[in-house]
Each structure stands twice: as C-alpha cells, then as structure tokens.
Image (cartoon, rainbow, N blue to C red; front, side):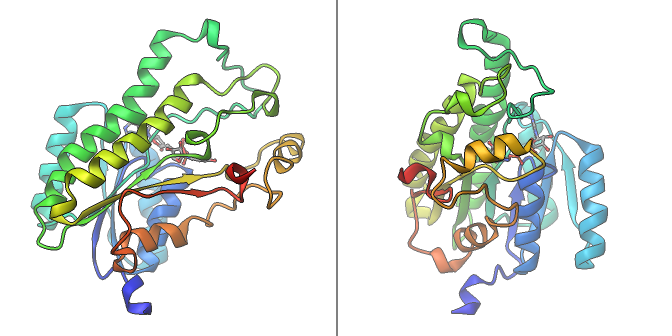
Length: 267
Ligand SMILES: NC(=O)c1ccc[n+]([C@@H]2O[C@H](COP(=O)([O-])OP(=O)(O)OC[C@H]3O[C@@H](n4cnc5c(N)ncnc54)[C@H](O)[C@@H]3O)[C@@H](O)[C@H]2O)c1
C-alpha cells in the first residue's frame, strides 16, 4: 500500500509554484520521490525557493519563469520541459490571483458596483485562462503517456460557497472574479476528466479552505466560527491530498471535487 503513494520520479509541473501553497505542493512531491517542475511569473521568488529546496532535499530542481496568460510562453515552456524530461506525468493548476482582503492595511476597493473590468479580466486571465492553457499544452503531453497521468486543479471552498463579506476587513471585499475563477475551475476539471479519460489522464479538483498565514487575530477569530474544526488550515495540511491524487493510490479517482476545508462547506 505504501508503495502506491510513492511518486516514483513522476514529473509534476506546478504553476504558481513560488507562492504559499505552491511551496507546499513542491515539498509534498519531493518528500514522496516525485520530481516537481516549478513555474511562476516571479523569477526572484522561484530562485529563492529553488535554493531552499535544493538544500533541503539535496536535489537540482528545474525552474521556469513563465506568465501562464501567454499562450506562446506556455507552448514554448511545455516544449522545453518535454525536451528536458522526455515525459510529464502530472500538472497542478495552482496559480491564481488571491488578494489578501482580510488584511485591514490593504484597500482593494472590490465592491461589486465599482469592480473594474480590467481587474476582472486580469483575474480571469490568470486563474481560468492560464489553467486552460496549461491543461491544453501540458495535458496534451500527459495524454501521450502510455500510463496517462494526473491533473489537479486548485479550486477553493469559495468555489463551492459564496464569500461571507462581513468576515473581511471593512474596507475590503473578496472580488467577484475569485468566486467565478474558483467555480469555473470545477467546470474545467469535469471537462478534462471526461475528455482524456480513455488516455487515463485523471483530472480532479481540490477545494482548500483558508490557510493560516499571519492574518489579524480578529479575522482568525471571526472565521473560526464558520468552520466546524474551528480553525484555518496549516499550510502543510494539503500535502496528503496532493500526493494521493498524483499517485497510483487514487487510480480510480477522476472528475472529483474534494472540499478540504475543516467542514466549512458542510454547514
Ligand atoms: N491561501 C489560501 O488560503 C487559499 C485557500 C484556498 C485556495 N487557494 C488557492 O490556492 C492557490 C495558491 O494560492 P496561494 O495562497 O499560494 O497564492 P499566492 O499568491 O501565494 O501564490 C500564487 C502564485 O501565482 C503566481 N502567479 C500569478 N500570476 C501568474 C502568472 N500570470 N503566471 C504564472 N504565475 C503566476 C504568483 O507569482 C504567486 O507566486 C490559488 O489558486 C488560490 O486560489 C488558496
């Protein structure tokens, strides 16, 4: 059974790898003998992450600076990775704009009547169109494997329920684009899960709840009342799901949408 969770040198492409959750996906994959390939628009943060992980895991991780909203860049990047690794076994569509509206020092002005079309377009471009482009190019490479592979789309508890705006700082609203991106990615998941099923490319979504990350205490207190487990997630609490869904241990899991949110969406 333990062997089924071994990623056995599977090559897994991660978008938004340099962010909070991206770091954790990389650690989870490395701990289970997989080969994470790190993509992010922020080269500086990618390099810092590479230095940290190379030291911790005695490895030589490959990083690719990439704007996933550019089709040309995504295509070229997929060709370079294919050339370097010969195969791609998995993809985590993780990158998305995720404004920290719980921070009272920020002022996002995301009220619906004033929400700018420009911000809407940018958010959709990263979180949805970027995931589509990565699915198109990396997914196509995965579909050419004899054994197929696994795609994980990172949705959110807010892909399943609307945001409770009173939880956030008075000045800030969770933007409408976040809900649309996170529920849209569930549609992309079901489409992909059925499209490449005969090639054994499985595609599933996880819907993580919020992660504790130095938010104001008042916010943590308010949000804990919304969650049966009465707390946000610790940043490493998604490792198990990531490894399970990428590994052969989940070989019959396809098209699933899995909330991992301390029970928030069960209430
Ligand atoms: N943090 C949470 O509490 C939480 C909860 C539920 C779901 N999520 C989801 O998890 C995912 C990661 O969230 P996070 O908190 O780690 O966010 P983050 O902001 O820390 O990381 C996002 C990363 O995406 C990168 N990125 C942005 N635009 C890009 C582009 N055009 N091309 C390539 N990379 C780009 C950023 O540089 C950043 O490193 C998101 O999809 C988010 O919606 C997060």
